[in-house]
Amino acid sequence: MSGSIERSDNERTTVSSAVSTGRRGTDSADYAAAYFHGYSGPPYTYDEPHWQTFFGRIADSLVALFAPGTSYDAGCAKGFLVRALAERGVDARGGDISEYAIADAPADLAVRLEVRDLTEPLPGRYDLITCIEVLEHLSPEDARTALVNLCAVTDRVVLSSTPDDFTEPTHINIRTPAAWAQEFAVQGFFRRTDVDASFISPWAVVFDRRNQSVAEVVAAYESLLAPTLRELQEKRQALLVSRRELDEHTAPVEIERDRLATELAGSHAELAGTLTELARTRGELEALGSADLFQERMNRLAMADELIGLRAELAQVRVETETAIAAASQEADRLRQVLDVTLADLAQARELAGEARTAATRARDEADQLVVERDAIKSSVTWRIGTKAMAPVRAVRRLVRR
Image (cartoon, rainbow, N blue to C red; front, side, top):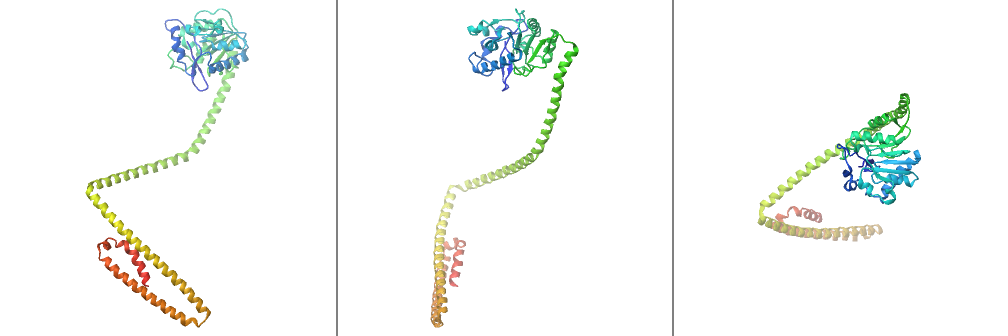
């Protein structure tokens, strides 16, 4: 059987197991190949680097804290922690109810492992017992028996038992850390309040056998509880201040968000109106019929051709007008120069002015002729269609006559 250890990415990965063969518990068959293949995270194999690093860090911490000469991992699964401790010089052993897990061990590790029902007494004595995510797999009666057996062969137990992972089917005896602490206290084991075992799991605890008075037990727990409560209060206050600051900064954002939401709703309504109008227009076009549409298109093409012709004529008139204006301007400049040079040229200038007037008369005659032509055009169907289009041309011609 196996329990789960809280990893840094919040994945719970099963790492150890032990179970009673009692009728109300699970048994070895529940922890066969399918159980271990169902672990979350990387494959639960001996050559997987993740597990070597994971259990190696736990072993490093245990050796640094307690320097055990001997150890026993109760519910060791495939013995990863046993191997890690042995590599660090500890005479490490382990046992598990799962025959599959023990049989799968390599030869150099198999000599340190055994198939073990924790409800049976353990032989020998050990400096350190580890029981990681195991007791929650046993029935309440078997878990109590296993706990008594563990305490009988050591003065120090490292316990980790999930308090809230109810989704795993084999977790039939989940209890709070306080409940386990009470069970250990009955055996004369008390929590080491000076040791942080969170390198295993957030709820991991070290229990030592100690002959303590009630006053000493209270003092030890108060030394842990009082700073924790003070820290909790300070963090709650800091959280409240941060929440208020966050609300102060997010209020304008929420107002702007609501405004944009209102504008977006208006845009959606406007778009819906546009789509409705488009559908209506399409319906009108379909109602006209294909023949009417073809005739309408032909009429529009004819009007476009006539309009193009009128625009070309207007452009030609504009060019001629601009040319005449430019020439008249140059002539006026020349006349002013001649006038400044000598009074004698005044007569010649007057003659030139007369010629200019003659040219102007001729231009007016030409303009009159254009008017006649215009009247002829005006009487045509084309003129009636393009009356409005010719308005700019008439304005230009009036300018020419002046």
